[in-house]
View 1 (cartoon, rainbow, N blue to C red):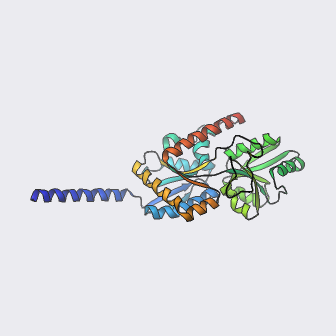
View 2: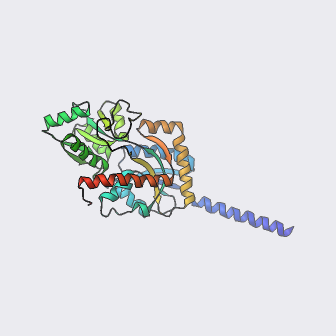
Length: 323
Protein backbone atom coordinates (compact mmCIF):
# COMPACT_ATOMS: atom_id res chain seq x y z
CA UNK A 1 0.00 0.00 0.00
CA UNK A 2 2.81 2.36 0.91
CA UNK A 3 4.59 1.50 -2.39
CA UNK A 4 1.40 2.09 -4.38
CA UNK A 5 0.86 5.42 -2.63
CA UNK A 6 4.41 6.55 -3.39
CA UNK A 7 4.10 5.48 -7.02
CA UNK A 8 0.85 7.42 -7.41
CA UNK A 9 2.42 10.45 -5.70
CA UNK A 10 5.42 10.32 -8.02
CA UNK A 11 3.08 10.01 -10.99
CA UNK A 12 1.15 13.08 -9.94
CA UNK A 13 4.36 14.99 -9.40
CA UNK A 14 5.61 14.02 -12.87
CA UNK A 15 2.31 15.08 -14.39
CA UNK A 16 2.59 18.39 -12.56
CA UNK A 17 6.09 18.93 -13.92
CA UNK A 18 4.90 18.08 -17.44
CA UNK A 19 1.96 20.49 -17.14
CA UNK A 20 4.30 23.18 -15.87
CA UNK A 21 6.71 22.72 -18.78
CA UNK A 22 3.84 22.84 -21.28
CA UNK A 23 2.51 26.01 -19.67
CA UNK A 24 5.96 27.53 -19.81
CA UNK A 25 6.14 26.67 -23.51
CA UNK A 26 3.17 28.93 -24.22
CA UNK A 27 4.61 32.37 -25.13
CA UNK A 28 3.39 35.24 -23.01
CA UNK A 29 3.06 37.28 -26.20
CA UNK A 30 2.92 36.22 -29.84
CA UNK A 31 4.15 38.69 -32.45
CA UNK A 32 2.27 38.44 -35.73
CA UNK A 33 4.54 40.19 -38.20
CA UNK A 34 3.28 41.94 -41.34
CA UNK A 35 5.68 42.97 -44.09
CA UNK A 36 3.76 46.09 -45.12
CA UNK A 37 2.93 49.44 -43.49
CA UNK A 38 -0.14 50.06 -41.31
CA UNK A 39 -3.26 51.05 -43.20
CA UNK A 40 -3.02 48.53 -46.05
CA UNK A 41 -5.13 45.45 -46.70
CA UNK A 42 -2.67 42.95 -45.19
CA UNK A 43 -2.35 45.00 -42.01
CA UNK A 44 -6.15 45.23 -41.62
CA UNK A 45 -6.52 41.46 -42.10
CA UNK A 46 -3.80 40.75 -39.53
CA UNK A 47 -5.51 42.92 -36.92
CA UNK A 48 -8.85 41.16 -37.38
CA UNK A 49 -7.21 37.77 -36.86
CA UNK A 50 -4.88 38.82 -34.02
CA UNK A 51 -7.80 40.04 -31.93
CA UNK A 52 -9.58 36.69 -32.16
CA UNK A 53 -6.48 34.48 -31.97
CA UNK A 54 -5.78 36.07 -28.60
CA UNK A 55 -9.03 34.62 -27.29
CA UNK A 56 -8.48 31.19 -28.86
CA UNK A 57 -4.90 30.79 -27.69
CA UNK A 58 -5.29 32.48 -24.33
CA UNK A 59 -2.28 34.70 -24.85
CA UNK A 60 -1.64 38.19 -26.15
CA UNK A 61 -1.25 38.44 -29.95
CA UNK A 62 0.12 41.72 -31.30
CA UNK A 63 0.63 42.86 -34.88
CA UNK A 64 4.12 44.11 -35.64
CA UNK A 65 4.67 45.97 -38.92
CA UNK A 66 8.12 45.34 -40.38
CA UNK A 67 7.57 47.12 -43.68
CA UNK A 68 9.96 47.29 -46.58
CA UNK A 69 11.18 45.49 -49.70
CA UNK A 70 7.87 43.76 -50.36
CA UNK A 71 7.95 41.82 -47.11
CA UNK A 72 11.62 40.86 -47.39
CA UNK A 73 12.56 42.59 -44.12
CA UNK A 74 9.84 40.77 -42.20
CA UNK A 75 10.81 37.45 -43.81
CA UNK A 76 14.43 37.89 -42.78
CA UNK A 77 13.27 38.72 -39.25
CA UNK A 78 11.21 35.52 -39.19
CA UNK A 79 14.25 33.48 -40.24
CA UNK A 80 16.20 34.93 -37.29
CA UNK A 81 13.35 34.51 -34.79
CA UNK A 82 13.29 31.77 -32.14
CA UNK A 83 11.41 28.64 -33.18
CA UNK A 84 9.23 28.63 -30.08
CA UNK A 85 5.94 29.96 -31.46
CA UNK A 86 6.51 33.49 -30.19
CA UNK A 87 6.98 35.01 -33.66
CA UNK A 88 4.77 34.37 -36.70
CA UNK A 89 4.53 35.95 -40.13
CA UNK A 90 1.24 36.71 -41.88
CA UNK A 91 1.95 37.01 -45.59
CA UNK A 92 0.54 36.52 -49.02
CA UNK A 93 2.23 34.90 -51.99
CA UNK A 94 4.52 37.80 -52.92
CA UNK A 95 7.05 37.33 -50.14
CA UNK A 96 6.85 33.56 -49.91
CA UNK A 97 6.63 32.50 -53.57
CA UNK A 98 7.62 35.46 -55.75
CA UNK A 99 10.58 37.17 -54.05
CA UNK A 100 12.75 34.03 -54.32
CA UNK A 101 12.08 34.09 -58.09
CA UNK A 102 13.08 37.71 -58.63
CA UNK A 103 16.01 38.06 -56.23
CA UNK A 104 19.34 36.25 -56.39
CA UNK A 105 19.76 36.47 -52.63
CA UNK A 106 16.59 37.46 -50.76
CA UNK A 107 18.19 36.51 -47.46
CA UNK A 108 15.84 33.62 -46.80
CA UNK A 109 14.75 30.32 -48.35
CA UNK A 110 11.07 29.62 -47.63
CA UNK A 111 11.47 25.88 -48.16
CA UNK A 112 14.20 25.60 -45.51
CA UNK A 113 13.79 28.62 -43.22
CA UNK A 114 10.01 28.65 -42.77
CA UNK A 115 7.23 26.21 -42.08
CA UNK A 116 3.62 26.94 -43.03
CA UNK A 117 1.23 27.09 -40.10
CA UNK A 118 -1.98 27.33 -42.12
CA UNK A 119 -3.64 29.21 -44.94
CA UNK A 120 -6.88 31.06 -44.44
CA UNK A 121 -7.93 32.83 -47.65
CA UNK A 122 -7.37 33.50 -51.32
CA UNK A 123 -7.93 36.79 -53.08
CA UNK A 124 -7.83 38.38 -56.52
CA UNK A 125 -5.66 41.12 -57.93
CA UNK A 126 -7.27 43.68 -60.16
CA UNK A 127 -6.96 46.94 -62.07
CA UNK A 128 -8.33 50.07 -60.40
CA UNK A 129 -8.60 53.62 -61.73
CA UNK A 130 -8.29 56.81 -59.71
CA UNK A 131 -11.20 59.21 -59.35
CA UNK A 132 -9.59 61.68 -61.74
CA UNK A 133 -9.45 59.12 -64.55
CA UNK A 134 -12.62 59.51 -66.63
CA UNK A 135 -12.69 55.88 -67.85
CA UNK A 136 -15.28 53.52 -66.39
CA UNK A 137 -14.17 50.26 -68.06
CA UNK A 138 -10.94 48.61 -69.21
CA UNK A 139 -11.70 49.44 -72.82
CA UNK A 140 -12.38 53.08 -71.94
CA UNK A 141 -9.11 53.18 -69.99
CA UNK A 142 -7.22 51.76 -72.98
CA UNK A 143 -8.78 54.38 -75.26
CA UNK A 144 -7.97 57.13 -72.74
CA UNK A 145 -4.29 56.10 -72.53
CA UNK A 146 -4.05 56.03 -76.30
CA UNK A 147 -5.58 59.48 -76.57
CA UNK A 148 -4.11 61.28 -73.56
CA UNK A 149 -0.72 59.60 -73.34
CA UNK A 150 -0.25 58.59 -76.97
CA UNK A 151 -0.28 54.97 -75.83
CA UNK A 152 1.95 55.51 -72.80
CA UNK A 153 0.89 55.40 -69.16
CA UNK A 154 1.99 54.63 -65.62
CA UNK A 155 0.34 52.15 -63.26
CA UNK A 156 1.02 51.89 -59.53
CA UNK A 157 1.91 48.54 -57.94
CA UNK A 158 2.33 47.84 -54.20
CA UNK A 159 5.83 46.36 -54.44
CA UNK A 160 8.67 46.08 -56.96
CA UNK A 161 9.04 42.83 -58.89
CA UNK A 162 5.61 41.71 -57.68
CA UNK A 163 2.91 39.85 -59.58
CA UNK A 164 1.01 43.18 -60.01
CA UNK A 165 4.13 44.65 -61.67
CA UNK A 166 4.39 41.74 -64.09
CA UNK A 167 0.66 41.88 -64.73
CA UNK A 168 0.96 45.54 -65.74
CA UNK A 169 3.28 44.35 -68.50
CA UNK A 170 0.78 41.65 -69.47
CA UNK A 171 -2.01 44.25 -69.75
CA UNK A 172 0.25 46.46 -71.86
CA UNK A 173 1.04 43.63 -74.23
CA UNK A 174 -2.61 42.61 -74.49
CA UNK A 175 -3.78 46.11 -75.44
CA UNK A 176 -0.60 47.24 -77.21
CA UNK A 177 0.13 50.00 -74.70
CA UNK A 178 3.42 51.14 -73.21
CA UNK A 179 2.46 50.81 -69.53
CA UNK A 180 5.20 51.37 -66.96
CA UNK A 181 4.70 50.02 -63.43
CA UNK A 182 5.46 52.40 -60.57
CA UNK A 183 6.44 50.38 -57.47
CA UNK A 184 5.47 51.58 -54.00
CA UNK A 185 6.41 50.41 -50.52
CA UNK A 186 3.04 48.84 -49.87
CA UNK A 187 -0.55 49.42 -50.93
CA UNK A 188 -1.22 52.26 -48.47
CA UNK A 189 1.15 54.80 -50.11
CA UNK A 190 0.00 53.68 -53.56
CA UNK A 191 -3.61 54.25 -52.52
CA UNK A 192 -2.69 57.67 -51.19
CA UNK A 193 -1.38 58.71 -54.60
CA UNK A 194 -4.42 57.25 -56.34
CA UNK A 195 -6.79 59.12 -54.05
CA UNK A 196 -4.80 62.30 -54.71
CA UNK A 197 -4.93 61.65 -58.48
CA UNK A 198 -1.15 61.56 -58.60
CA UNK A 199 -1.37 58.35 -60.59
CA UNK A 200 -4.19 57.32 -62.89
CA UNK A 201 -4.31 53.58 -62.22
CA UNK A 202 -3.06 50.81 -59.97
CA UNK A 203 -2.87 47.05 -59.97
CA UNK A 204 -3.21 45.42 -56.56
CA UNK A 205 -5.36 43.16 -54.46
CA UNK A 206 -9.11 43.46 -54.00
CA UNK A 207 -8.58 43.83 -50.20
CA UNK A 208 -6.39 46.85 -50.90
CA UNK A 209 -8.92 48.51 -53.18
CA UNK A 210 -12.38 47.46 -52.07
CA UNK A 211 -13.05 50.03 -49.33
CA UNK A 212 -12.31 53.00 -51.57
CA UNK A 213 -14.07 51.33 -54.52
CA UNK A 214 -17.25 50.98 -52.48
CA UNK A 215 -16.91 54.61 -51.36
CA UNK A 216 -16.71 55.71 -55.02
CA UNK A 217 -13.23 57.19 -54.60
CA UNK A 218 -11.63 54.78 -57.08
CA UNK A 219 -13.07 52.31 -59.57
CA UNK A 220 -12.11 48.67 -59.95
CA UNK A 221 -12.64 47.79 -63.60
CA UNK A 222 -11.42 44.16 -63.83
CA UNK A 223 -10.11 41.35 -61.62
CA UNK A 224 -8.01 38.26 -62.19
CA UNK A 225 -9.59 34.85 -61.77
CA UNK A 226 -11.94 32.37 -63.38
CA UNK A 227 -15.04 33.96 -61.89
CA UNK A 228 -16.20 37.32 -60.59
CA UNK A 229 -15.63 38.20 -56.96
CA UNK A 230 -18.65 37.84 -54.68
CA UNK A 231 -18.06 41.31 -53.25
CA UNK A 232 -17.69 42.83 -56.73
CA UNK A 233 -20.39 41.15 -58.83
CA UNK A 234 -20.46 43.99 -61.37
CA UNK A 235 -16.70 43.95 -62.02
CA UNK A 236 -15.72 41.64 -64.91
CA UNK A 237 -12.77 39.28 -64.90
CA UNK A 238 -9.87 39.71 -67.29
CA UNK A 239 -10.76 36.23 -68.49
CA UNK A 240 -14.11 37.59 -69.68
CA UNK A 241 -12.22 40.37 -71.49
CA UNK A 242 -10.08 37.87 -73.37
CA UNK A 243 -6.96 37.84 -71.18
CA UNK A 244 -6.65 34.14 -70.37
CA UNK A 245 -4.34 32.07 -68.20
CA UNK A 246 -4.54 33.89 -64.86
CA UNK A 247 -6.96 31.72 -62.92
CA UNK A 248 -4.59 30.69 -60.10
CA UNK A 249 -5.38 33.15 -57.32
CA UNK A 250 -2.90 34.35 -54.69
CA UNK A 251 -3.40 33.39 -51.06
CA UNK A 252 -2.83 34.45 -47.47
CA UNK A 253 -1.19 32.27 -44.84
CA UNK A 254 0.66 32.31 -41.56
CA UNK A 255 4.24 31.04 -41.31
CA UNK A 256 6.64 30.16 -38.48
CA UNK A 257 10.42 29.70 -38.26
CA UNK A 258 11.77 26.31 -39.27
CA UNK A 259 12.04 24.03 -36.27
CA UNK A 260 8.89 25.22 -34.53
CA UNK A 261 7.43 22.16 -32.74
CA UNK A 262 4.65 20.39 -34.59
CA UNK A 263 2.43 20.51 -31.51
CA UNK A 264 2.70 24.30 -31.54
CA UNK A 265 1.97 24.50 -35.26
CA UNK A 266 -1.06 22.23 -34.88
CA UNK A 267 -2.39 24.30 -31.97
CA UNK A 268 -2.05 27.52 -33.96
CA UNK A 269 -3.59 25.96 -37.07
CA UNK A 270 -6.59 24.71 -35.08
CA UNK A 271 -6.99 28.14 -33.47
CA UNK A 272 -6.91 29.85 -36.87
CA UNK A 273 -9.50 27.42 -38.25
CA UNK A 274 -11.82 28.27 -35.36
CA UNK A 275 -11.25 32.01 -35.77
CA UNK A 276 -12.11 32.12 -39.49
CA UNK A 277 -15.20 30.00 -38.80
CA UNK A 278 -16.60 32.71 -36.52
CA UNK A 279 -19.48 34.42 -38.38
CA UNK A 280 -18.30 37.96 -37.62
CA UNK A 281 -14.73 37.21 -38.73
CA UNK A 282 -15.85 35.47 -41.91
CA UNK A 283 -18.16 38.38 -42.68
CA UNK A 284 -15.42 40.96 -42.16
CA UNK A 285 -12.83 39.09 -44.22
CA UNK A 286 -15.33 38.44 -47.02
CA UNK A 287 -16.25 42.12 -47.04
CA UNK A 288 -12.55 42.87 -47.51
CA UNK A 289 -12.57 40.82 -50.71
CA UNK A 290 -11.20 37.53 -49.43
CA UNK A 291 -12.44 34.03 -50.19
CA UNK A 292 -12.13 32.46 -46.76
CA UNK A 293 -11.09 28.83 -46.33
CA UNK A 294 -8.72 26.95 -44.03
CA UNK A 295 -5.67 25.26 -45.54
CA UNK A 296 -3.52 22.84 -43.57
CA UNK A 297 0.24 23.26 -43.45
CA UNK A 298 0.65 20.67 -46.20
CA UNK A 299 -2.04 22.24 -48.38
CA UNK A 300 -0.50 25.69 -48.04
CA UNK A 301 2.96 24.35 -48.91
CA UNK A 302 1.55 22.67 -52.04
CA UNK A 303 -0.23 25.89 -53.01
CA UNK A 304 3.02 27.84 -52.68
CA UNK A 305 4.81 25.44 -55.01
CA UNK A 306 2.05 25.56 -57.62
CA UNK A 307 1.79 29.34 -57.53
CA UNK A 308 5.56 29.77 -57.83
CA UNK A 309 5.63 27.40 -60.81
CA UNK A 310 2.92 29.39 -62.63
CA UNK A 311 4.60 32.74 -62.12
CA UNK A 312 8.12 31.47 -62.75
CA UNK A 313 7.15 31.00 -66.40
CA UNK A 314 5.46 34.42 -66.62
CA UNK A 315 8.50 36.11 -65.08
CA UNK A 316 10.87 34.26 -67.38
CA UNK A 317 8.82 35.13 -70.47
CA UNK A 318 8.85 38.78 -69.44
CA UNK A 319 12.62 38.85 -69.76
CA UNK A 320 13.07 39.91 -66.14
CA UNK A 321 16.50 39.16 -64.67
CA UNK A 322 16.81 38.32 -61.01
CA UNK A 323 18.41 41.18 -59.13
